Length: 127
Image (cartoon, rainbow, N blue to C red; front, side):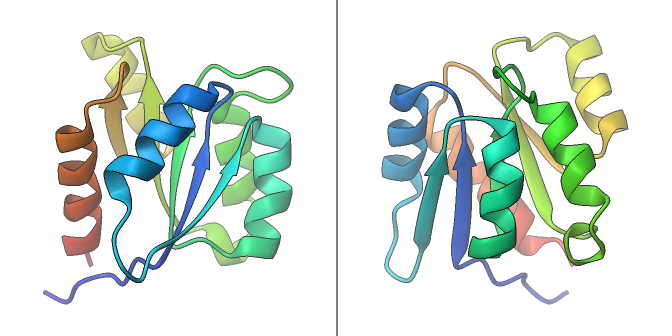
């Protein structure tokens, strides 16, 4: 199994605290980050930044995580992009909805740095 290269991570969350925490948790040599506060801007930023991985909050103003994911998946270059959902709604039904929407992973909020690093490592290991 080959590892997926992750160098550019787009962090999308309307909470500056959550964005900063995610970047601090994932900061490693060779990683580049872009942080955006809403789903609509995230879609535009993805086109410019070309991330290898996206950490996407589900509940945001303007365009929520589901809408942003659908917009990204509609673009051929982002159909295989790894996108992790981050949400305070962590019931089994919420996880099922996230999976059915096409997210590749899930992390509950408040974010745990260790769990976030673990989920990103799982994304890297998937082929």
